[in-house]
Length: 196
Image 1 (tube, rainbow, N blue to C red):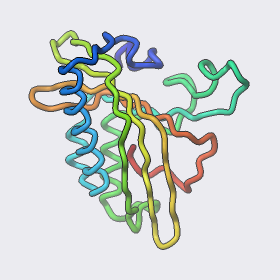
Image 2: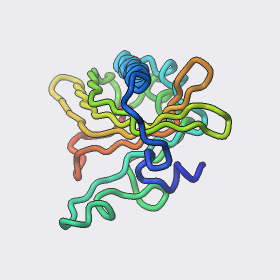
Image 3: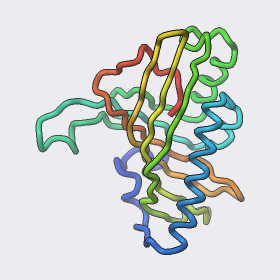
């Protein structure tokens, strides 16, 4: 795992800040299309296609949130990667196993399968850099709203922010890091069987 993945809370800190010129808006449009395609793959349960968009060194992290005293938010509002408990602290291998389990048809939390609709918005490029392999990496922040319906009457809404790092590998973008900030201190759904 890289230093960036384990120690930097805001992944954009290690990147060059963007200049909002024509190149920025073209790049942002390309990133938005990647995120919209990703949402469609997950909504349509095309998990194998989605897994192909994940890089091998992926860090997929969702901290737990806490209500804290004013002035202590930066330090104590969310759990830390590799130091505290979290909702997710996974890599590509574990995400693959989770998807494969759902696709068996005998996953207790996803039988019958959930119906999902994801909205992705407020996409911003927070920075860019070139890594040691001369690959472009982009730090991206976005907001999401995910609607989940199960069985007949179960409905859940998940909303929050994602801080991603995307890497250009050949002609494609690959997700290298995702930190998901869910706006709940107490999980209101029965489970977290979906992907964000």
